[in-house]
Length: 387
Ligand code: PHB
Image 1: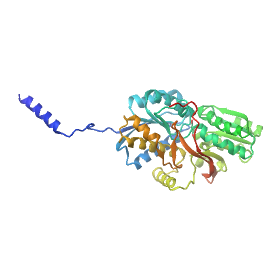
Image 2 (image 1 turned 180 degrees about the vertical axis):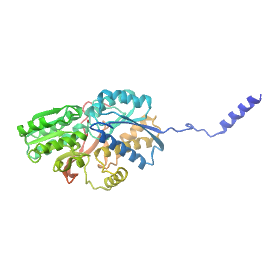
Image 3 (image 1 turned 45 degrees about the vertical axis):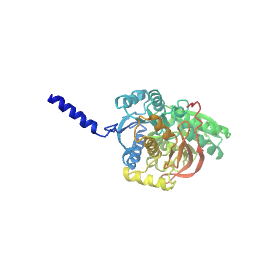
Image 4 (image 1 turned 30 degrees about the horizontal axis):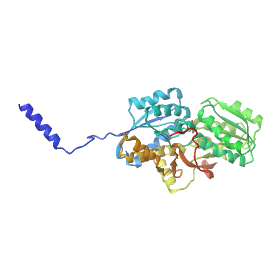
């Protein structure tokens, strides 16, 4: 009897408490799937650093809730992409994946995200199909499509009266699609690709290719390399005696985050990209100062993309006060967001890719100085996207 009484009184106390639907609100779980080793290691850490910086600027919260981070090093290895993605989804039960850098890994990751419905924000990899034929309500990108960054350069190279061009890239989706984007606009402008060269990813033995280029004597060379491989290519190009003889063009990944290591070998290279040094807007200046203060280095395009991935997620989480289970409300808020990016404000296309200006930049004194806008508010055509 005494036990029964005690039970009744406990129940009465509980029922007298105000109703709280979630006695303990859980934090928002963010899973980074990025390269922290290999040729793209520096890209993964720039994305992670700047993502966290944006969250810290937001009081360390998403929709008012704490943020819990998980991370997996994908090593830019497509063969491990599915198991790495499932580790974050099934073991860590993350609310959102932020990944990745390498296009081949991104396609596998997007497939898992599409099948599981996990919210995915791609903070670099340009694989066209991610916001093309594979597009899905839960998949967003805050970087670029491979088509976007290279398509903008075709007219520039043709405008410089270069008629015959040799292309060189790593043989994987990222490189192949960048070359295709360039080729499309360059040929439309009357140019001709006289040779396409492919190097296995992530090899950096460029000598035989450079010897062949010297023999072919094209008007210009168009390449796609990034990270550690970009540093090596630019240095080897100069060492082979080609710098100053055959102009080198590229999407801006060739010279972003790499200039300190490339030194004067990079001087004068023209590139196209959705970010540049010296934009000199209050927004970019504040971002650059904060990044330099926190990480003792200058930010690059990868940092901007990571920062904007967080800004996009902040917009989504705000709509539901951090309740990430309300997926359609989170997605609707992300779709209608205008991101106040250091690169310049951008909106999200129907296929969930940035609609953005592509700058023409020139390497001068260790910076990718903005020269002009190569393509204004460029939107990826997103072939095959049905949403
Ligand atoms: C890609 O694989 O899509 C990729 C990788 C590194 C870059 C740009 C694109 O800097």
